[in-house]
Amino acid sequence: AGEGSILSSVQADVLPGPVALIFLLLFLGIVLERYVYLRGLNAYKTAMHLVFTCLAAGSMMLWGAYINRPSAWSVLYEVILWTDVYVSALQVKNGFPRLRRHNPWADKPANPLAWAAFLIETKTPFLLEARMAIDYAFTRTTLSWENWGLVEELRHLCFERAHRAAVNADRKLGDFALVSDKVLGVGVACLIMVLLLLPLMLFSTFNPFLRSNMVTNLDLGVKFGSGTTIYRSTHFVPRPDPQPTDFLQFLKRTRPVLGGFLGGDVEALDYRARDVQLLSLDQCSEDLWPISDAALAALATDLSNAADNKTTMSMSLALSVTRQAATGGASTVQDLSMEWAIPHATVTQMRDVLGRHATQPADQPTTLHRFLSPFVFNQPSGVKYFPQITSRGWRDDVTCYLSLHRSARNAAQSYWCVSCDPLFSLGNSPNGSYPEWACLESSTRGAECTPFNYEDHPTSVVGADVQVPPYYVIISDRVPTLLDVLPNLGIIVFYTTLVLAVGS
Image 1 (tube, one colour):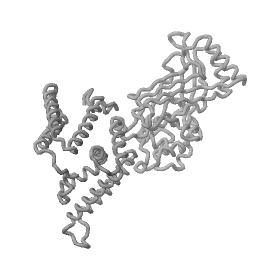
Image 2 (tube, rainbow, N blue to C red):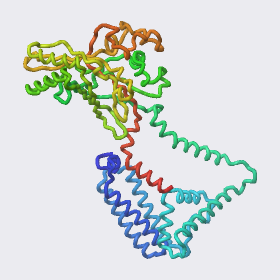
Image 3 (cartoon, one colour):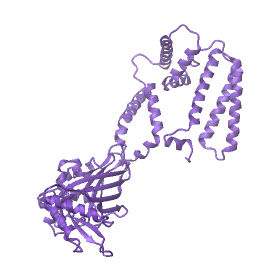
């Protein structure tokens, strides 16, 4: 649908005012038509017919003048409009009956069309109630509203019983139920089952139309307390890191606590459908360290006070995650923050690094034990670090190394670099040369995996002292494709639910 169409307005959850006004006028026209019919006012009916015919003719002329390519809906509208004009003309020609029957189908219980009309009137929400209210308002009667409704109910009950008697006239006592009735019963049972269970299936991992909810952008910032940012790096996904096909399985083998939150070993029975991304950031900050002399002196003072046990210091990590879809009012962009308390020995080392930086171009890295929480769970309702999901998640935090460097182009400018322990002994993408390869390739986590439990000790204990740039492993739950459909049906769903709930 084009911009400005009724469909586009419905998708935007805002109906055009003229559309709502047209519905109101149509309803008022129905009330007026019913009043004229109940009163038997033939002259008024003729006048109304002339006015309505003129409006229909005007509508047809405007339609032909301004619509170059009529749609199927507009053609259907005109067909219904002129059908109503024709029926109205017949009513004017024949006039209103002197003795009005309550319903035109009341004396034809065996007629299938009469039965269909009865079902339409009684089962359509608010249709029967609207006719009852209009008839009661414009009919001279001594009945109260409750008794009027009781009479209507008795009429419907009598017609229904007459119809049942006519349909079953040829059946004998003791005959089995008709096949059509059995089919109807089975159909109703299936319909109820679909209505109850289909939404559960559509929003479960058994939905065959689940799609990935991948992270498209990462942005990490690190700073001392509330000071200026010392490290910033951004990862855009069209450059994902290469990873083995069984990468998720490799994580389960070497990290038992994490593996308990990734599902079972038999993927076909795994009730969590997930995708895994390994996203690496830059080792050195994208930006130079923007700090003034006064701020640098204040930072040195804070580090000295913390080294003298006069106060404490911390480093903060701010991670911004952008993903493809979200639910429950959550945003596609999620911000995560984490505070890392700086141990006393590390504070002392950092103070010495800043003191020597004025005379040395680079310094030995400062070790930050369990500094980075690399496992991030991307759920449609929100994004969380693994320690936010379980209190044992800290065991999968990795140690990183922080170093301060001078710019090669300008000795007065500095920047920070961060490197971390890898996921496995020799890096993040294991192959046959890794010591833990036999464990990774095993069908179950047996004795061969005991030395490679990286939740008990870092990877550097097993392999060489290998360091890699900061990285994150994003574990994303898949989402049903209906997430894109539901927002476009907001008005329709709300209005239909309200009408059916009140009507029933």
